[in-house]
Structure formats: structure tokens, C-alpha cells
Length: 303
Image 1: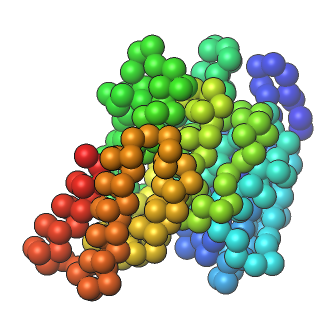
Image 2 (image 1 turned 30 degrees about the horizontal axis):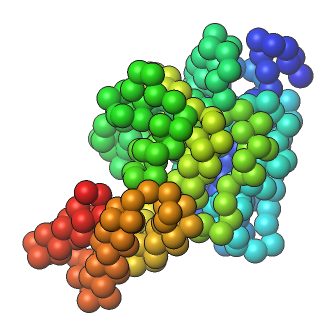
């Protein structure tokens, strides 16, 4: 039922999954309940060892007619989030893309709000909106906060894409689950950097802004974002893990070194090395000493 025209362009919702069987039905259902009609639904899986793929295929059996097109893309090996995102994007036919993790959810008017915004505001290719943050589940009791970004320097009046690029070299304040973007951005900047495991979003937006794509702010809530206690960043621990710290070091060497001050770069590396050392000492725990040391290390990085 392709009804595409200038007012209703095709949108590709791309669900990125890896061992997402516990939550993926919520994500899929939120795609089904969109008020916007012209949608294709793609699930790109990164070699899950649970029944994520089977769940998605079964769910789509009786619901595929709601979408212009549906597709499940399995992988024969685990390749990382960036490569998984790229597979989904390459399979997409939509003019606009909405990537969403298989444990997050879209609010019913998510796509409609974004499409209305880009139609009314020409020459916009990347949109950031607000999102609701939850801890582990989308129950009222688990609600944390409404993430708003309007007061950040990244979205101040008159800011340019290159201004955003320089800000992103120093800190990352994008809420990736609520990003909505044109397919041509992916084509022009080469998608996600697959050499950057565990830090896929930061290099992507550095590449985008450096290429002249400004991130525009839609001051409305469009997504529910689940903060997991077992996230890759912390894996159930209170503070950043050694693995994630090493991933940020690799990112810094490739994207930050030479593009900002030497003082900032080496201070960042020093802070990350301190976090790695604290993890090796098994100090990533709930003690007062750990809290002081890890906060000091992060402060060194972010000064």
C-alpha cells in the first residue's frame, strides 16, 4: 500500500536486535501502532543466541499487511552494533530512516511528528527529539525522567553544523534512540564506522556534522528509551567498564586526536586509563572509595 508523495514519503523503521527476545515485541508493537501510514519495517539481527529472530518472524506473519514492506535480516556471525545498523540501512527503501533498538519503543505519533517537522522545515536532514527514560521496564514506577536537550549548547540558536562538530569532539549529548534522519545522510557519509565497536553513535554524528549536516531539535517527545542495568557500558556495574573505556580510547585516537587541543586529548586518555586501572583493581563496586575515584577519573576526562 505505497501511498508515497511529497507529503507522505516512505519511512523505514529499522529495529536493531541482539538477544532482544525479552523486549522486542514492545518495539514491534510500537511500530505497528504508528499514526503515520507509509512505513516499511526492517529487523536487523546480529546473530542472537536466543529466539529473537523467530519471535520477530512469527509476529510479522499476521501483521505484515499493515506495512508497505517487512524484512528480517539475520546474520551468520556477531558483527557489532555499527555493522548491524549498516545492514538494516542498506536494505531500507525509505527516504527517511528511524533506527530503534529492540528494547526501546516509539510513541504512537513518533513518525508523524518527525515527518511533519521535516516537511514544514525544508533542508533538514537530521532531527533530534525528546524521549522518556525508563529503568529496565516501561512501567510508571520505572519512569526516570523526560530527556530534554533544548538548553544544551549543541542546540543553541544560530548554531551551525561545524559548530556542532567541534562541540561533539569534546562531549556527546545526542540521544540516539530519538534521532530521525534522511537516507541520503547515510549514503553520503558512509554509514556507521564498523571499526568502532561499542561506540557507534559518537563517530557517526561527528562524521555527519563535519559533512555539513546540522542536527535540528524537535521539542517533542517521540520515543521511550530503556536504560538497562546490564548495558554494554557498565554490564551491571556502577561505573564504566574496562571494555567500554578501551572502546572510547580507540574512538578518541581516530576521531579526536589532531582535531582538538592536545591538552584535551591527553587528559581524556589519562582519565580513561585511570578507569581501566580501577577496573583491573576490581574497584568497580558500590563502595564510597570507588565512587570518589571513578567520579574523579570522569571529571579528568570531561574538564
